[in-house]
Length: 164
Picture 1: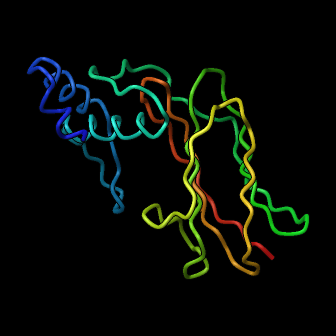
Picture 2: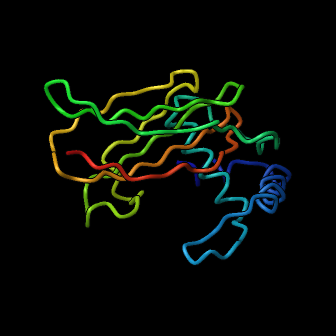
């Protein structure tokens, strides 16, 4: 769907996305920095906004402050079952929070984004969301980031938590 939307953009808007993509630096698994293309940035933002229930943007986002947190933590509590609760302390601003939790795999030594068992978006001001689990004596990987209304993505906060 986003590829068709890219094709429907004017040449000027596609060029604006290509220019925007040059301002965004990504890091691969080997630690090397790179820039993606305009269509990659457009497709990513398109998909995120659809999942957040927002209208997709035709224009690239205006660069501003990255949404983020003062701190993030994951807690475990037991009330008739185990409950993982991500808690964040957001910086000021109106943005969404993307949370991903991956199930146990090799003791969840790292987060596996392509195998996450839970992924959701909530408002930045809602600072906790419980996730009930049935597995005990397992580790779960987690990853949390802020995404502005315009689609600017903040840095990922990641970690691993053990459920006893």
